[in-house]
Image (cartoon, rainbow, N blue to C red; front, side, top):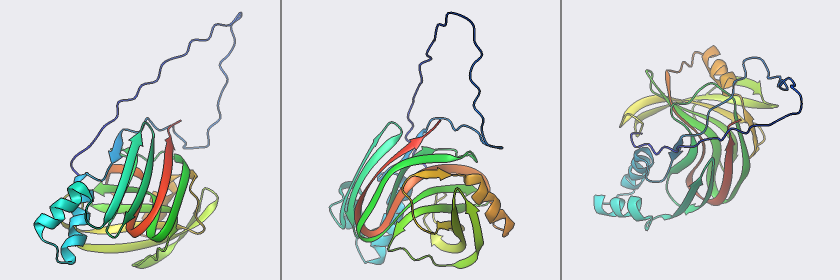
Length: 245
């Protein structure tokens, strides 16, 4: 993924005047917990990776370059995608026969916990709600799937882990000559799938990174990292807010 849309957000300080000095209240955070900065990245339908993935799917169906270009620019072929980002949130409705992924988050990502809230509804077909990201050196595409519909994981099951009140199955998959943030490449996918979905919660991403590493699934330098919705052939809607504090 090359094109990046940044949001410039700012917080205004609030001054509180007290009659007498008092100590600031302390906030106890769990060990290794850090606060994330503001989201600064949208992965939208016009992002080069999104376009490349959709083009690859359409090419396998025998569509011409002209037909594929018309689709990726105007969504006239294969369905509709309405993605509306706003601040730390986005709303989405979709009804499509092809692959797309959209989301909000950070570039680069980090190991800090991710808190998100909202809804995720699928009326037909396949779709997932996940923390989705990439690393480089090695090139890895990763998912922590929090909720899904019609989705069956493929690849090699490596084990399981427990995090944030739930259990996850760990999978590894190899993608050959597939679209990536570095163009068409062969790369590994690392995937955690939550047993029993949820559309709001906390993802302690470091637990997944550590769990993958324990199975020999090494990551590289963090690139984009978003709370994403992806579908391969589905219809539905979502509304998600990334909580940065």
